[in-house]
Length: 439
Image 1 (cartoon, rainbow, N blue to C red):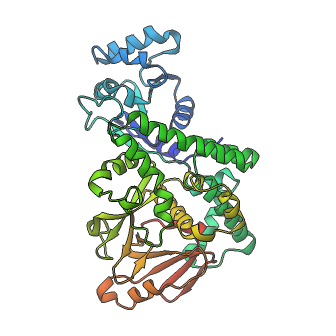
Image 2: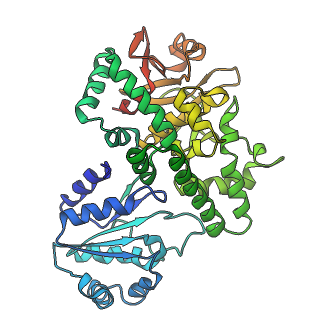
Image 3: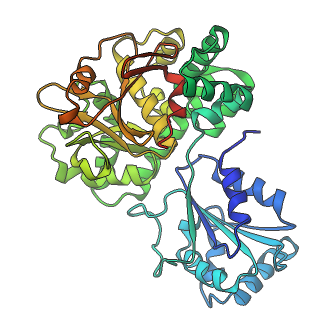
């Protein structure tokens, strides 16, 4: 059984007075249904569950009056003794709520009524072409949480790393002291495993139970194929083939020295205008995330992002690796990354930052200056270099020499290091990236 951070957020929601119906968004197969059902069964006397994807007939419950009395009566008539509605003791789970637009609209009336808690989950909520859109989004009547596949810290929990061990890492970061060698080596090993396994719950569970990498790869490629099936099934018109082409080009994009997204790698003479809708579709589905170039290295980062210049990363490192050629998993676990090493480690750090809730930014100028990531850290604009192997930091050193121009006073180097500092440059092992919170 995997421990998930969403469990604490669900408890916080339940303990909030005047709580609103809750919507949990996230990519397919990231564990939404399991986590919600576990929470519901642990915290309520009665759980009423509707899955609109598996049972399209449930849509009829919401086809008439959206009065709560009418809805609960219809559910009780359909489910019989499985549906017990008792004020303050019943939670209603509306799984795959994007398949029933009127159920989303009905959240407003459950909010006003207040007798029953309601959670809706959705994999492709708001994705263009997917499902019927609600006539009225219940603005102000719902709370929204985003759920990702397991992040690196959750992966550590799944592999027996305790909170006490993670506290040692936090203390080491705070004091800038070296991690004990035995722990350092174990965490480096787990980082490489996370790189190839990623965070999809079914994949992590299989890995933890059996450590069979062929099984891991098969499960990952099944998930990738299900994503591609969604693209074909739900995208509109000519977007179907474009979305697939865009998605399949991501490994080639990341393998380039200059990783700025280039539409010509999808099709010759392709333009942003012809493919931007495809990018948005895949991003809205929670499969990829954009990392925008900055015009200036200063806060606020979002205000300095260049909208049309960006890199693209897969949100889950394991799924990205599964899209590469056979044998890549073995090479990574052995530490032999060859030509893809930069792409793999950048996507790994993008995965870690994205799952922390960070928006992603980098900095590149035509003069040749380039920094992998730029983040807010301890209230300052901070450069982050990702080094798959030891290497120079020419760009960051140049930037540090000119604080009057670049407004930067600190750099973090992530790589095959232990904790250390050289003046304004803090070196950290990549496995500590998840500790770099913005405050």
